[in-house]
Image 1 (spheres, rainbow, N blue to C red):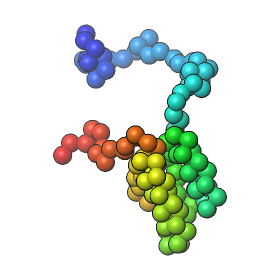
Image 2: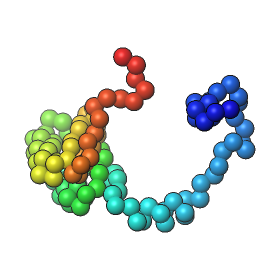
Image 3: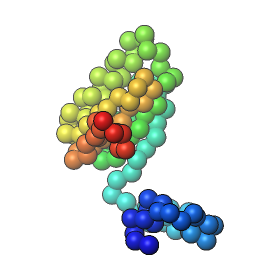
Length: 120
């Protein structure tokens, strides 16, 4: 069986022996030396936007949950404008995914606007 058949599933069914359990202690030790991190943030107000901006300025990616903000509130627009400005300043990217999430990236990282695995 070729590599792609193994990845895509091929004709064989999987057994428990086909899977390898990962030791999370090993993964955590390796990721401590990473040049970039992905942060998950919940935005409830202006103070949360400051933490997000700091992370992006430090070169990290932030996935922000904005569901706690009311969409009719001007605070949402103010926070979104601030985060857009940060993305522009660092030559990064910012994408709003639906009404509940934003992805803000640092210099040199772009978010694709195309979904993987979606046939047109």
